[in-house]
Length: 233
Image 1 (cartoon, rainbow, N blue to C red):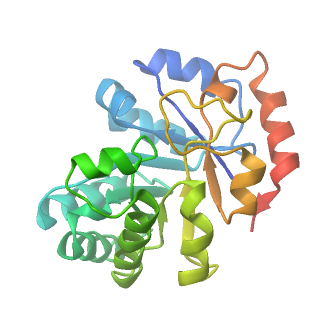
Image 2: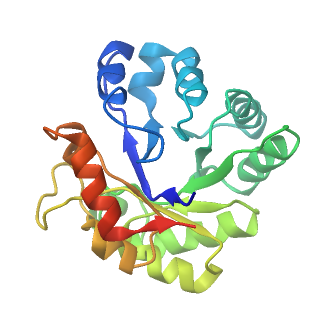
Image 3: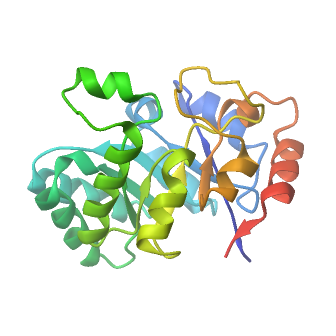
């Protein structure tokens, strides 16, 4: 069965609250994203429990450290059975290569993707960090480095997805956060798009949070979005 393109972030402070949402959806409807808040609160055992129930789990811990530390963390994540995990492309070539090599030695390597520019950052924010090029240009630069290091794809905004696809081919995955069902509904993100616009721009997977987790009927919301954007082969 083709995969749903949707990854729902479990941005909850406890396993109990996350579990209440997970009970309302199925592995066929979406993947689940576990980030720093829930992982810190609930730990790896909760991640393993999601995998055991058949969910594809995107472990979104954005590893960024010295190469050996990141490599060991990636190997530990693979042992949990996660579907996908990420590192920060800003960690550089040696770090990303170490992560790739560590996963290659595991029995079931998960997809490894690199975060380019956080969707909460815009050109002005990057300038404050001493980065002269704009968000789109910097994201494309980091995507080139990730591709050169043999990673499976990147996290980027919908604004950069098409250029990254054109540069690196259909097989290089683009995972796009900052998805809002209504145009102009930005919240804490600077570079956002609707699901339809993101897929047209070349997104393979969409991270969609509040619109699903706060919906009165998450199942119905997922069904509607999945029918609109199709599945990922």
